[in-house]
Image 1 (cartoon, rainbow, N blue to C red):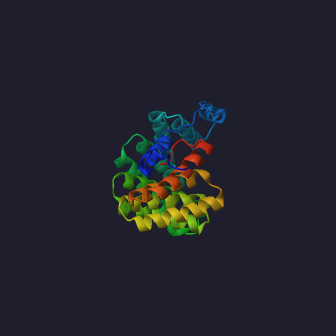
Image 2 (cartoon, rainbow, N blue to C red):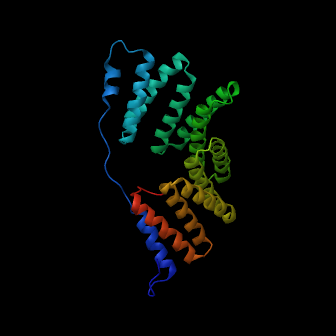
Length: 258
């Protein structure tokens, strides 16, 4: 997109950023699955089945933005899992509880629960290091920890957790997550003012996202790279990347890019 003669590159850049921030999509299924209703009301359901149903209902309530209700369902499920010493279920629930606290802005409790999750995952992997499911669940929580730390401006610590998550994603050839974690690492480096490393990870992520057809993450990476270039006063290239990010966002109706 060419910048009009009456506008400076910086003016066009601001307009693109404002347009990106204003993107929204609407609509979600507000119903509670019949399977969940049945599990919660069947008298002969086992304790573990009821706990699993509580977990599923909590996830549905989380999607609807009913965080307090979701949290209570997660806590109810957790009490059962802990009583039965179901380590994998406990770790999964810790992560879900952490996500709720993060959504509510309680980063301290969110971080506590994420770290509890990772601690259990580490214990499980000591006995079975090739447990790919556990490794990939651990990867997701490591990324969540990185997000919290980045929000708290602990950028170097965030990069440590993001990088470990990236290593796992690359090991299991999860291209979608690899591109996403490249974006997160690039963002943290940019916040440190390390534009060279930031540029490297944004470029790496863009290449992977394009190969994988992951438009959502590609748009996020283009946005990050555009902001990076803006900070380096390279306004024309910044505007080009931000414009590309905007085009993709409009195409796929993404809610937001960060």
